[in-house]
Image 1: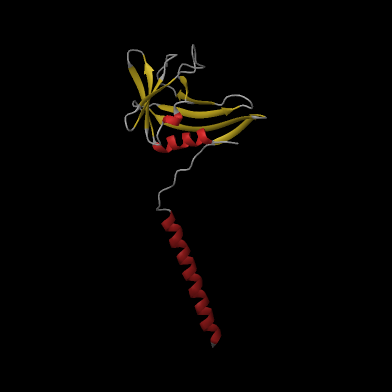
Image 2: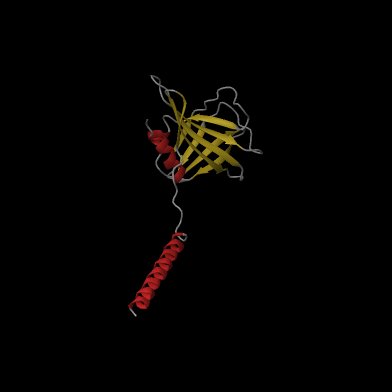
Length: 174
């Protein structure tokens, strides 16, 4: 007579455990996903380290741009830190050399020098020296202004999460 009672308790506990597991798994799907940094570290040749953050951002016209912030570390040489902006098809052609205008959410305006002095690898690519700029940028949303002829700009909004990732690239070490 004791075995049916034990069996009933066993099945009740098993069902309770399964039910509890489903509840916890279900509740987990209602939470918002957390953003994780996608900073990558590459070693192209022995001793040469490249840290990189890559994301896609939209400009004010809805065109997509790839933004790649990368830090190159060479043994015995100065470290470089550059932001490359690559326009996807139908993006405007950039003029060189023109500085990139960076505006913080608090209104501070900085400029980054154009790395391509004469000609870029493609007309929709710009690359800018961020070595002295990034340490001055607060961890807040930014707006990038790529100059076009006639005092016009392509404006690209950069969310705070991407700026945080850029700071992580800047402080990355071997």
